[in-house]
Length: 293
Image 1 (cartoon, rainbow, N blue to C red):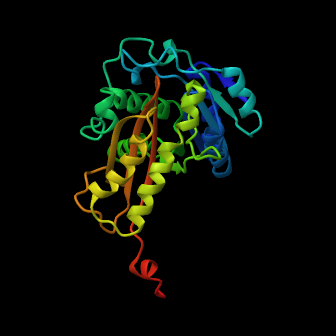
Image 2: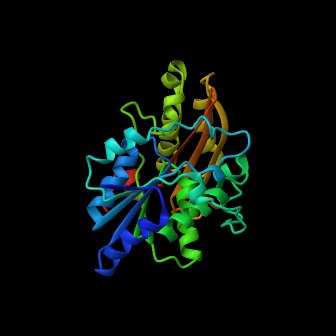
Image 3: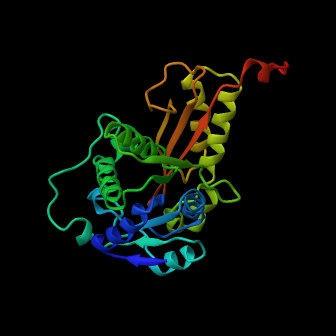
């Protein structure tokens, strides 16, 4: 495993593999790796000849009052964990390598980047889409791996790649959870012990929402109410947003039909903002009634 901090030598190394027809997979991360990230790495290793993991805490996706300085970093631990996998390259550039001059070109998806979390965090997804585009241009991968927990991010990256005709397969990997259901996140380490104990309420509420949809409920308001009542019953949880959207487009849904929907939750516990999601679908009529298909 080789570590690069500069773009030019990484490009030179990857060019040699590309010239002999080897496939390249990339796992973009902001570091402070956990089992969720490693699941992405595991998948990338299984599906590509060469794998690049990027570690970069991207300042352009943080707002002026957000937690850029507090975002956890531990490059030594990250490298130690990656050493357990046949990862070929780690790209961990300093900020001045990625943003060596004032930016005039950005990638901004509208309205997809301005809704949901984009409304709570203006400019966040412009920063995400721009840095991912830069990483894609540097690595030129065949496949890129993202977790489903950051569902709006995943949807935005898929749409960006499709709209800009990028020849990259975006591979979604299911959310990895703690044994008690809490979605793994680098921010979890910042939860107080009291908040960590109750943060599982988000997953429990999403479980209930998924169950209600699978049971045949067609009214989005009824489903959202079932989720909201569970989260709001926990006094340490500050529900920031709760939405039910089409699972592919993130369009608003007036009535739940045959297409899957996604439940999206953003909740604050103390100073820590957590997100989680759950894709849900109506069961077939035969499954609901027990009839044979």
